[in-house]
Length: 466
Image 1 (cartoon, rainbow, N blue to C red):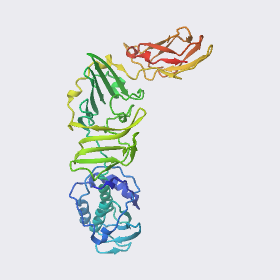
Image 2: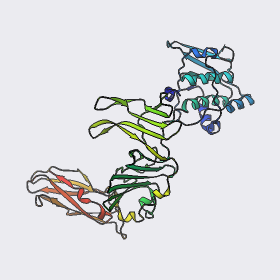
Image 3: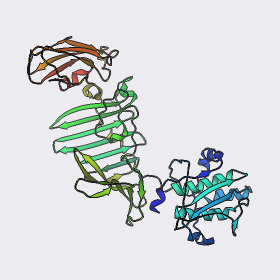
């Protein structure tokens, strides 16, 4: 497998209808059969270096080589073959253009036999550098076969590395256990922070025990349990239009709103290239770009090793920014299973989680989020809720009032409280604040009641005043 096989190519095709036929029939034309490898030195092909140019972008797909059947059917039906124009570039970048059949170079109006086309395309696949233009044809079906052959050969090894869709593994020597079931759109994570501190998280498209008709029953939900010294606290995030943008414990590239979806565990930010220099026991993929860490070393920005000829990952490294430092982080994977994770991982979800756990989307928003106020001056601050409150016993009203920390008599504000519900939660209300005495920085601390806010630490959503 050549490292350059992952280079996207471009093909100039004179007939747009060919692409349409290809899209329409691709599922029937991709089959799995033996690999035919000719001697690429026949007819002088071995002395040339080829260039490939594909102008239309074809979606990467994983498939085996196009079968002989496509060619045999074309012969049985006596399909006409197109004239093939081959533009070859030698090692000195000198090019020549010719047409070929089984015996010799042919004129532009002559037709090329499928057997020679097969050999040319096979050789092109070996060198990965064929510049090819189809000029004319009377029947499109054989033309489609040619295109499929190129695409299958070019892209079979272009599929980017992918974690198993169903897998149980540890990325850190069993400190963290992760079970991913991408087929059923659910995942589990257990993080042992210390001997008496454990985080357990679930994310699911259809989380059990959600209240009927609630947002949690309609969207992906991540539930996080923190068990610390015998006590358990819990919170949940709903991935919808009012998401708080908190990512929780699962990969951030899975999403943070209504577009959330459990996909590849890893997010490759670069085009990954398959290496021919891997060991006999491993497959190695590396990014097409390098990155420098703070200590001066240069590494591939991302790379990953798999067990040979499998999708079982062994280790992964990437150059990342941690705080203000750029480092290279390495993860060694322990793979326990690449089969469907047991339902037992998800049966530990508390049945009353929607009642006892904090809704992470509930909060208080300010604009501006801090103010500077001189003596006897007044400022107006917009206040609203980022997500609709909950209805408790058919009452969804939230009442918010504030108290000043440090200097209780340095400011006045009106109104003294604001009231929100599921109808006006995102309508901005004005809080008017006046400084009546000089002081150092103070914090205007909110207190909330109703609408599910009784479990929300509103005191942490303060407004600084300078």
